[in-house]
Image (cartoon, rainbow, N blue to C red; front, side, top):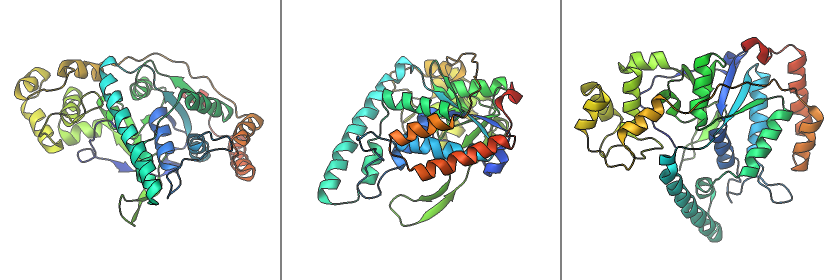
Length: 337
């Protein structure tokens, strides 16, 4: 999902302890999709479920991964998506078709007795109930959350530009097009990762991308970075411009430096105009927000997780670490406002 700038953008690998006393706005939907896609049975592809059949992969990921960040001294604020722009509707519909096809392949793979996880991952989806449960869990953990008016990445970027948070975090590169000053990737998927179709594992570490470094490295200003991303393809024009890859896109933007000049040099085949997508990235719907400081509620957090059959021993161990972190004087949110 989102634009793929990985082959062009300079990144800095960092460690979790580098985030101590930093406040980070995390793209909630993107992160939860990661959890429900990855936290599954290796063979059957089934996500974690409780005894009532409710999916709990997202809760497991949020609890343990967020706790790890907090134990390292980071303050985390999750930003939830609001209403998508109207011109994203087609993309959403196409994604649902892809999920449905993945569901069929998943069922067929299970019936054949084959490893089905790769198909199951493509069938992942979030429900309103899962989102509300996630918000409730975060509150009991003492973690703040914000409801964005539109795209979560845009709101997280706005918060970063205001100085409310140190960085925004997501796996999607759209944050760069929204002009976040600092952008973190791999925040919740770090660790050993199996390469697709291979029995090989690689170490995934958190990455820091700074917008000023991106501009200098590419030799582009922010408007041109938006144009670069649109040429390659975004959620609003999947596939980008036909026949244009990252290197060609960079060359085109450097040759045709403005929106008007670039528009005349390419064949645009998408329903939504180049100008409308550009304007959305440049001036997305965002809101001033107040981040309420939350308190860790050990009993409520434990009760919520036990209702979903989480291991009491592991819950206790994690909550003890969080409580110890708080007592040792972990910097509160108030320092950053």
